[in-house]
Image 1 (tube, helix red, strand yellow):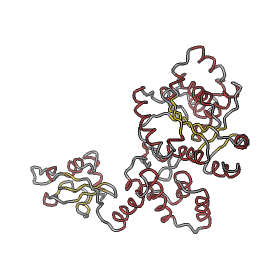
Image 2 (cartoon, rainbow, N blue to C red):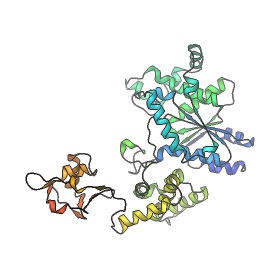
Image 3 (cartoon, rainbow, N blue to C red):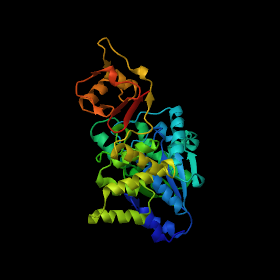
Length: 405
């Protein structure tokens, strides 16, 4: 294993908090592999780069020679993590949790080394707890302390509902740490209370307490809000390579160093050099985004996929060429109305460019719809069918295409 100082340089890169750092150093100085814990509740089947931030840090621990335990929260997900919430999270069914867990693991293994990852399900020990065991666990926690949590405190002072079962969540997450004997637990920065609860419970049970390590929430492609599918500012781990590369190219220049540090496989030395270049004004954000896009696409789609995605991006945007993989639709989807015209609202929905006729009209009015490269004028919802024969290419924006065949 690397010397402790070299390990800490890697471990601390990009982190928000390590509590307490001196205890982590002491654990590393023992010279034996640590057990690094990350618990995830599979509340969604689709992961994005924001979800992958702690997974990237886990992979760094693996590369340093440590053991990682990925806990699939098929028990805790039945409650729902209240962290950062201003209302009670809707509970998931066991069927939903299991379906989501399967896809989560498949996507997580794109980052982690499967052969060096221990995967467990906390439902295996949580669902079997009897009343006496549950009461014993809950007796280790203080309601006043739990109400100090920012999310619970805000909801309480604002008179918003807090369901009693939400108080149990940090108790169960803490018990996970006891079961797997975690040396360090990772989570987002909004998880710090739950991670420290694990320290408290382990100490109360005469165990060496875990260290808490938190990672920042990744800012989305809009440059403002945290990455989230609901905000539409996300880069999905299962996005097609060309789409993934294009989304990386769309991030603001200010975010480039952060994305290199939190999302790439680059060495700490290279990332530090990128930070320095931005600090002294010598960085080329455009070129660095291209390199970053290749790195990220290779990570999730395999070596060589990044270069191919970059070539496709250049063909589409730098040379204004039509992409090779444009979805094709039979020309029979073109319907002529009683006025001898084709209603674009219906056609754009048929070929998947718009979700509804209303959205199609908005796209037209914004100048975002092109037929064979020529923009459709605003308010022009009905067009001459002669424009829509076999071989015609329909386009909206930079990523929505369709060809009639």
